[in-house]
Length: 421
Image (cartoon, rainbow, N blue to C red; front, top):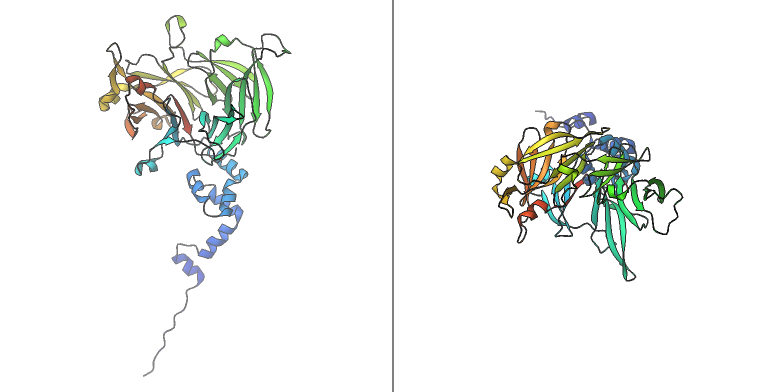
């Protein structure tokens, strides 16, 4: 009887690679070793994934943080989605953060309380002044030689990078402008008043002038005078960048002072005319909210808390007029969350809420407003009128009805971005 010996032969490399899903490990290694190919692959990934992939290796970190790559990603994906909101309460220095990421919903991480904003070389917490396309304009007071200096920064909370702006004093207001679809560089505009001892080269009607700091230049420079009366604007507490212009406004102003960056022109942007008798200035206690989302400007003003109707005004890009875009019906919300109903000192029934932010999606059907009602954040869809609770806030101690209405006086968009500062 003859015996036959069995021999085991290896399958061809191509056959083995097909059994492993079509790619051999050596092929993957070759692809990973070619920078151009790897960059092309990485460019299709969401920014949240890229942030995780920075930890893979020093080489991947270098590729992803390269300004050319990050600028390419930002420009190709503009406008980047809003990933959450920073919330500031007048009772606390630190910020709360509400995430809009559905993954955080699954892991019960929608809300982060007492979120500090600080840099490693500063002891003071940062105060957010403005949010624009992923960058924050911040300030902090730092002790130096027995006095305090206020420093201003541009900060990317996603990459943790920041830039200290050159010292500037005697200003009235600052505003951050950043449009990554047009340029990888940002600008900060400063509205300054004429000092008492300054000699005006123009006429005495020059009450203000605007200076600009550009990230690619690094210095403040004067750009244009402002020939208008300060009584027109009253104050310049807040700022928003929209439609290629910075807009300053205050709680008691009816207009925005606007500066068109490309034309270098001063303009007046009226806020919606709400048919107030005798055109009185708004009550400082009135809820007013102005912000930009996906290229459009939105405005809400609430002076009568007893009304269940909440109109949302919109101004489209390149437009100059306001229109009522949406109407939020607060009554179904109050039925679902009865703690939202309270009484004022005259025993009048009022709705306790405030606005966290607008989120305009690719379609109107997906767009929504985020509201704060007592100890909750609620997402309200504009079109189908559906709503759902996103998260709970810790209750305030000895809170009064007005605390619910004004609990978060300032809110700021958080947009994940690789923008270099």
